[in-house]
Length: 279
Image (tube, rainbow, N blue to C red; front, side, top):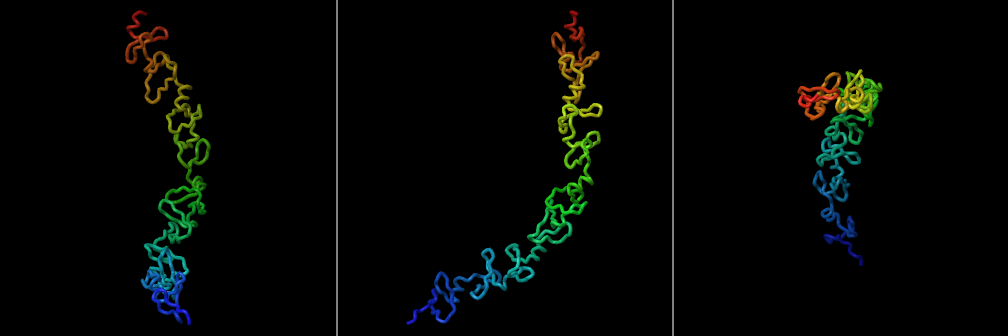
């Protein structure tokens, strides 16, 4: 006697019928499709055993239902993209959502390399120097007047030359007596320290930091012997070829300030009228 071979679910005989094995249990086609078939995202019908089940991110389609949402062209075995859970062929996606090249105005296709700068996009071959027309790629560039230039072309066409080293100034720089300088080239004539960002003065067209200028050229205070810069509005007293800082112009004996007051002299000393009575 032949052993019965029945559907695991409905128990009907599978003798002479098609069936599907799942976890080593046989099912008739009707039960298997009812229990286990995926539902097509497009038509919402079960994807039967005799149909090809196409899946993407846990979603399933009949082969005939797997097409572009816009143009309806089949996407089976073709590249595609998704937007808002809708399938789109590469062409429809590009026309609708991809960036347009700022140079040739054509679509930049997904997967192709593009260059971006300040919200604009270019094909890699369209992102070229406005002067030499060579692709810029990943090299440094400088934008000017809505055009982009590779650094060598920008320096040749636009950059000012440092009056000291004669090389182009591409960033920053200092203007002194209407002439351009690199910050690294604009140095104190005396100590060779950078003058950019600090106070300085000049003598005979040479620039000096305040310390060097005072040490080299400023007159010395008759009292403390340190230089009197006279820069920045600082005040000093001058009398008979001698100079004093305002704070140093004091009576030799009682140290009272003599600024704006009468005074007497005794050889190299200055005295207030009271202390000078004994002279």
